[in-house]
Amino acid sequence: MQIRELGKNGPQVSAIGLGCMGMSGMYGPSDRAEGIATIHAALDAGINLLDTGDFYGSGHNEMLIGEALKTAGRDRTLISVKFGAMRDPAGGWTGYDARPAAVRNFLAYSLQRLGVDYIDVYRPARLDPNVPIEETVGVIADLVKAGYVRHIGLSEVGSATIRRAAAVHPITDLQIEYSLISRGIEDDILATCRSLGIGITAYGVLSRGLISGHWTKESAGKGDFRSVSPRFQGDNVDRNLALVEALRQIATAKGVSVAQIAIAWVAAQGDDIVPLIGARRRDRLDEALGALRVTLSAEDLAAIERAVPKGAAAGDRYGAAQMAHLDSEQAHH
Image 1 (cartoon, one colour):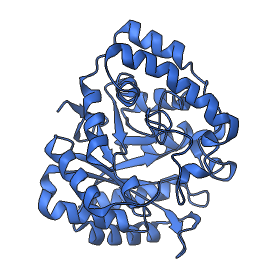
Image 2 (cartoon, rainbow, N blue to C red; image 1 turned 180 degrees about the horizontal axis):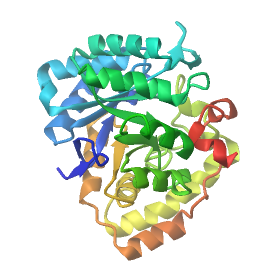
Image 3 (cartoon, rainbow, N blue to C red; image 1 turned 120 degrees about the vertical axis):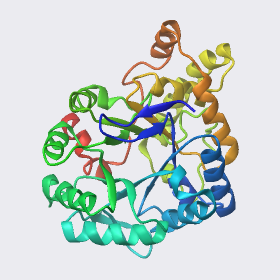
């Protein structure tokens, strides 16, 4: 497994990480046994970064990882946890809470569900509009001193927030969507992170399956985030799938899959970038691991750029209400 440094003061991580959200029902029904088997297979392949959120399945995902770790061993893993998103019993989303008292509470519950005594990277999932980022980072810094957290991360925040956070405590990485069809971070966020020595953990590298090469309009079922996501609606989905077909021609010529070329493209954007693969089955994990063997030449990168030009995607990453919660997108709207 290739190893990358996560930020200038962060841990050594595998060149790809495993995003575990899909194992807890965000994309339709989940299969517990297959999820655990996929986590074990990832660790056996040398992936050490497991990414979750305490609100994925309202604690379900952390408990699933905790179960997998009982037999897999804590010392082989780096656990990255997002907190702050609030849920109701019906599974609805009710806002964010990143007040210091809430952060300590969330962390206490995460440690229990995961069955661990520290978390490797702890991060607010979004910017809480009611709490200065300095207060949130400040309380995590206290938790670092107390030994409950090893590193502090951020998620989906813009350059000004990143700078304010880094002034309080070193930030290891920014987790943010980055893919061939979501390239907003190239405008200024990526440069800000690089100037501060902050790594990137890139999620959505297959744009929620849209550019995986496996998606068809028949794929979305009940309870699937994609049944409401703007990129998967109406004319948007047809335009976006046309981009996938252009990408498929390049992939086929190289003898690799569409997903492999899409993952390899993100990894090729810098050795400070770690793509997170949202595999919830072992076959998809195997395909993603194959992306590490794909080398993209300058010609390949130019061909990919022609097939999927920057800004070519139709539709926003989320619906309007959720886009308003993204500090990382505010400069663009």
